[in-house]
Image (cartoon, rainbow, N blue to C red; front, top):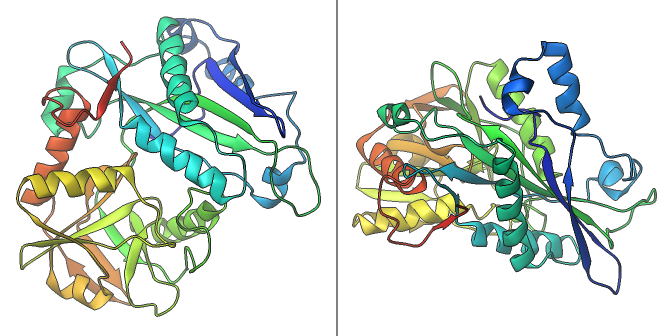
Amino acid sequence: MSFALNSYPTVYRAKYREHSQWSAEYLEKTHLTPAEEASLPEKERDALEQSRNMYDDMPLVNYTSQYGISCFEGLKALPQKNGGLALFRPDQNAARFKRSMEGLFMPGFPEHDFLTACIETVKRNAVLGFSPQYKMEWEKDSFATADSVYIRPFTVAESGIGVNLCREPWVVIINTPVSAYFSGITNDAVITERIRATPKGTGWIKAASNYVISALAKHEAQEAGYMECIYLDATKRTYIEEGSSCNIFFFLKSGELVTPELGDTILPGITRASLIELARDLNINVSERKISIEEALSETKECFVSGTAVGATSIDSLTYRGKKAVFETNGALTAQLRNILKGIQYGIIPDAKGWMIPIF
């Protein structure tokens, strides 16, 4: 199961008042036990899940709904082999969320509050029974179909109708179950003609508005039979930037692992940074630099995308204006990096880097 709008009952919400502090609360939305909810007729279960998405004390007309002034994060709490539950690098999400909010000229949400709220919402939902349990069978496919708790922090603006900035945002944090992100027979990708981000824009921010183009381009790619779309730079239309919601890596025939260098048009992915570090631990020559579409098509041995949702997912081929380059499917380096990453995340490999923060 990929993303689904069936959020767990406990929700965190904080509100900023200009020239004051954040005030926070935990809301426990309507729920039964997980077993009782699963046994409900489909219509009743859908209605219950939809009710948890309703907030009658937040404005419909606001700077988020009217102009897309919002940002969000995505991170996971992962079942551990020892029976616990742990977050993967939440401090990095906290820092990026604060940067995103400040990049949109909102008051930044305190990183300590972010960490505390993420841990507490997962913990409270687990107490109510809403938490996946570790399964040995996940190890057979390198955790490709493993379950986890997806944590979605996001901002909602105050009431407003004229074009303006958000000065008094809400921060809301919900939990949902999630499993495999990509589904399909092949992992083929295509270069889209659409432009995701322009210089001096918001590409470096995890802004909600960035994902409008992503949704359109991803839909067009899937309609054409591809799993994913990949963007070129906005200026020269020559260099690869990232996927619809993920960073991208190319393992070249020379032995160099290349990922596009960060700038104001590329989101600084936390999984991206983690994989770079893991690859360097393996003595792989990793470069963060520009890579042209011509170089990627002609020199790539393995290709994979990275992100919270996708982990490290192999790309089998890349097509650009009718020219198709085929790469090694689930190549040796891609598989090795994915196995190390997932092993650390699910607790079957020792966490020597201190990336995992236990919840219990």
